Image (cartoon, rainbow, N blue to C red; front, side, top):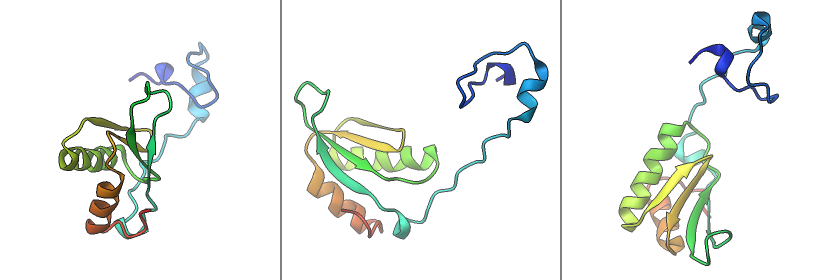
Length: 112
């Protein structure tokens, strides 16, 4: 992707000034915290979902790939659909107790 097309945190999308982009540092690649240091929170949610219940897993700190891998494992165990993005794992249905137990079994000891 061309550096002129990259959105910036300050909201600027395009500039004709070539020097404007040189002062912006590249984003460092994030690292995933070890399982025992992750503080995951599991809760049920129905907001903006037409009354349907979803299980949310919040608090994951790490790369997008690791988040998606954990989300895929949980969706497979639950046999349900869902998504993993923006630091959240969303699983369709009420699987709160099962998800908490699986995460603890997998080494995420600070899960509630």
